[in-house]
Picture: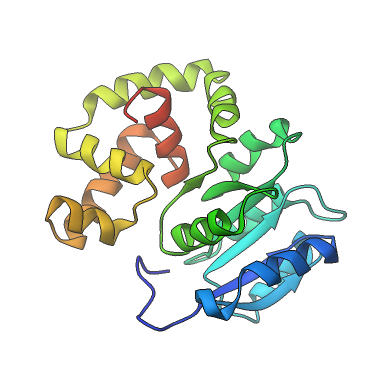
Amino acid sequence: MTDESPPGEMIRLMLVDDQELVRAGLRHVLTPADGFEIVAEAGDGAEALTLLDRHRVDAVLMDIRMRGMDGIEATERIMTRPNPPAVLVLTTFDEDDVLGGALAAGAAGFALKETTAEDLIRAVQVVANGGAWLDPVVTPRVLEVYRSQAAAHHAASAAIEDLTTRENEVLRLMATGANNGEIAEAIHVSMATVKTHVGSIFSKLGARDRAAAIIAAHHHGLV
């Protein structure tokens, strides 16, 4: 995946949910008029993995609780692939127990199934372009999961202090959902420089991806 979709190119999506009604609702919202092309739909994680072998996908909208292979295992397997698509997890209010697992699996963000069409469109655009998205309603619960991991927190606290001023600035911009191109424009540096900073942030925080880095930023008061 690249940080920016070429001008005029559709964002290619896969919908993964075992309820046809949910997928129909997503199709209704994520239309070509807003720059989306739904290239594949799957009823569980195993089917999604098979379809990924056949289709080029920029982002996957992933349900968590499904018959067969669930969304956490599917996300984890997707992330082992070369140049994997971003995964946006679709969650509900009663799924606190799975948020940590989805994050650890490599999800780029979380969006409530009950979110507005406008917010869902923005969330998909952000993750498809290399950013991370945390629904404001979900964020406190994700932070609670993060806080429960005490050993990781102590390491992260020390790591936050090791960030340079510029890396702190980049991390704060990441936490707003900005992708690398938007960060480069905001701080007046090249894309290559931003990628270097992002890589350094991941390394220092021990973060697997942008979502994990953003949660660390929220937890330590950088945002």
